[in-house]
Length: 192
Image (cartoon, rainbow, N blue to C red):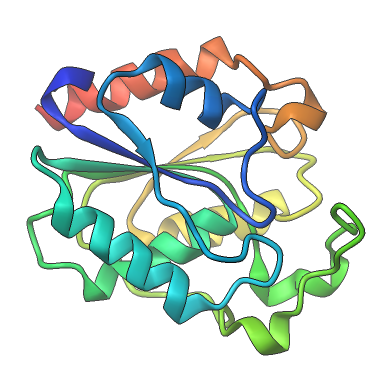
């Protein structure tokens, strides 16, 4: 598959993805990409985020491919069982946020993650109903590499260990992230 063959649904994480984040850049540069917007990026509620993903998938005019970052990965994992089997072409999951260990997360823009109120934990342990690749960092403050391996195994996702690259966001130097775009292209090609 090529980018023109699919609807690319960008699913940012907690606090969204700023204008220089690779997701925002891809959204601007890939004609079939659009963001799945949430009402509140700083006080996320799982059921609301999942409903928005399900709605975006239902509105897709081409096979949808989910491109999730951070808490968006957790939202996709929760949404998987609620999406019609065979509808989602695949998921490209980057820098998962381990909500089950959110007490270790750093503060973001003055906010701390309200695990107890969000409903995101525990993370599902069932296989996803679509092909997926999970890209994880060895020094991500939101998810340890060991936990990323467990999540990939639980979800039936292909794990790509990216080395010590932080949270794969603007703060870790991944604004454009050309390596990610190449990996995404290879992922799409594998969906054909």
